[in-house]
Length: 483
Image 1 (tube, rainbow, N blue to C red):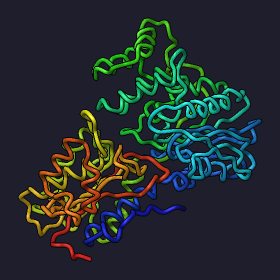
Image 2: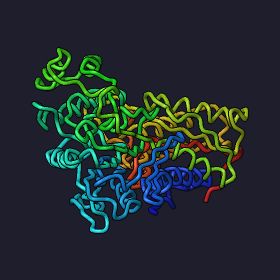
Image 3: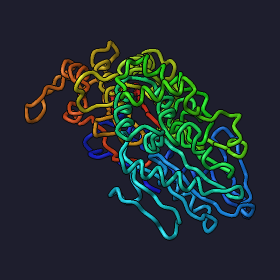
Image 4: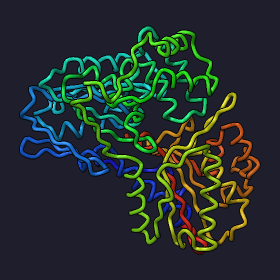
């Protein structure tokens, strides 16, 4: 199994407290790798395939009852999940197609492994492209070829919403690209974004299940959605959709999106009943469809907590579903960490506070390099530098996107303490690392370069998974020993 490494760790982990934070992050992300999740949640015994969900639900299917077994999927973790499913099914897998950002070779080329009889096709993230549409149409072809006596195994993970990008007729790829740009910059929540995407897609919002019907469909979902709503994970291609064209148009109007004319007319036509709605739970396509969440943010949080305990720290999970603006959420987290140091509540040092979920950044004009996790870290660093807490009670705050790609930062996230913005000048004299500089960079949404200068930017490369953000706050009762 792959491990998670942080570039320049020897420079970044300058105290034992930093080192503990990095250990927790690495353990959390590694536990969410799709190969590990599928190995734990899917088994084949005496010809019966069994899938167990994180909530304890399960489904069983006799492979001998099906003429063919096909694999479809999409998402940042879909390549690894697909390979793990293929290894478990062995010669009972008859083919399929998976779309991912890194098709098993790192060079963006399509892959077909003779020992794993399915193709892995490239997709671009986050904006739609011609090759992504072509890859999505191959997934549709596989689903369309399934019959009543076939089993379709779907692996759906975070990023799948962007990667399954076939536009609904009569929209174009350029229409989707412009729409996606507007949505990502709006500050809308992921469920709001996906409500719009579903109604501009040929495959999202349960439409893939409709295409595969009347085959039996079993979906393994790795969730990057707060609350694990099956209709929101990857825009729910095999799940019923409770949202409507009216909901989608309402999101666009609420955030005053500058929509292409074709998109606005398409949504209005749907509201008027001139376009078929996405399928609801009552549609026959879902009579033989089962979707199970096999990994989520809790998977990462539990592993990070175990890593903290292994290092002698008392772990406390604050919340798995933190939402809101990253900069504001950071202030709340820092306040809780400081309270731990001052009063021993809600945990006594040495302790590790953990949270998951998905914070957002509402971008202004001409944003630079940054993302929710780098902004969370920088905001926390400013709060720690200017706080009233005893600086000897060291607090280190680290935040990453588990996919290794935090917005436009070029990194996974950041790690800070009260000394990150202490007024030092960079070695080449090009910048001053103080709280004023951090605030200015945050206002310009260009915080990644400053964190990089401070040896506080965390780079992991693409991890091959996505269960949203993971935040670690390490609180030591006394000044940490510098390494």
